Image 1 (spheres, one colour):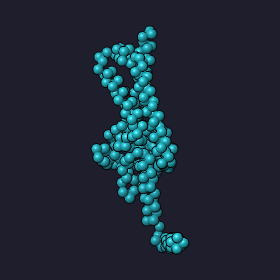
Image 2: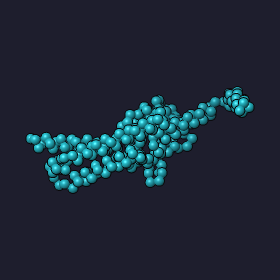
Image 3: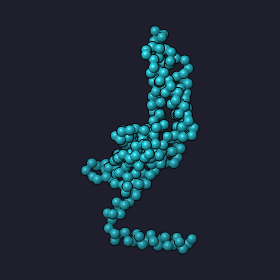
Image 4: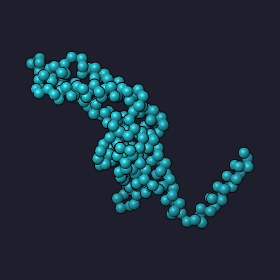
Length: 230
C-alpha cells in the first residue's frame, strides 16, 4: 500500500508540473517570446521538463516510471524552476500592464494565453483565445473578425472588422487590416487606436459636411491663436 501511495503522489506531482509547463511553454514558440530573465528562466524550466518527459517516454513499464524516474528530488527541482519562471513572467505581465492599461482587466492565466496565441497553428484556435479576452479588454465588444497573415515563419491573426453586438447590424470595418504581432501591450494599444480612427471616420462620413464647417472654422482659429502665442 505504501508503494502505491508513493506512486500516486509522484504521478500527481508530475501532473502539476505538466500543467504549469503546458501553460507557459507556448510562449517560447510565439511571435514575441519572452526575453531577459523571464525568457532565460522559462527556457531552463522547459529544457528540464522535456528531458524528464523524454526519459519517461523511453521506459516500457509504468511502474519504473512512477517509482524510479519520478522519485527523489528531481520533480521538486523542476517544480521550483517552473515556479521561478512563472514569477518572472508575472513581472513581465505587470510591465505590459504599465504600458497598456486595458491589460489590467485580464487575469494572468488568460493574459499568458493571449501572449502565446501565435504559437497555435489553427486560426480558429487563435480566434478562440483572442475573443475570450476581447469583452474584458474592450467592454461592449463581443468578438473580432480575424484572418490569417504570415509574418516571417509565423502565422498571425489580422483584424479586419469589429462585428456589431447585434447580429443584424453591420460591424465597424478598420481602414486596413491590423496584424496582431508583438506582445499584447503593443497590439492591444494599436487595435484601440485603429478602432478609434475607424469610428471617427465612420462618424465623419455620416455627418453632413455643412454641419462640420463651424467646428472646422473654430478649430482653425484655435490653431492660429496657438501659433501666435508661441
